[in-house]
Length: 172
Picture (cartoon, rainbow, N blue to C red):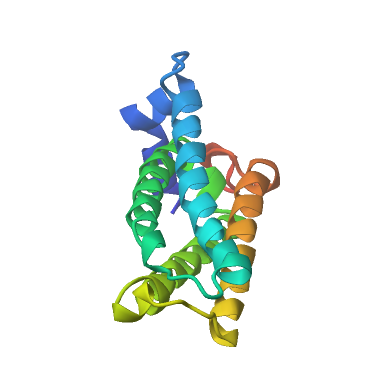
């Protein structure tokens, strides 16, 4: 594993993202990641809040166009996140916090699709909607998952044990 991490850290793209003085390297990629996260989590939580507070008696169909925007935000966060991961692969891939963050995001995205299929599309989406207990519970869990993902993403900057592969035990 240490060999793979060391190799990743030495690729030209990794070195450029990590060490370039250009604002288009790490700072801009981090900005894009934050923007993508803001889009995906912001709109997903916005849909959850709508379900919890404002949905009763209103049709859900007008909110369906937000789902592709959520996926666009996710794509932006995914690509920029992959570049950030490439800059410091050891830092993330040796931290359990990273894996919990990824798991929270995966489950939250599954819930976005569940919400889309159950609430936002189909003939019933054009009728006044009254959220049931299961849908409300899913919305609360979704809010908790996005909050967890954001919190853990920030926590990664402070909880790592190894920054680079050369810091790993037994590294030469």
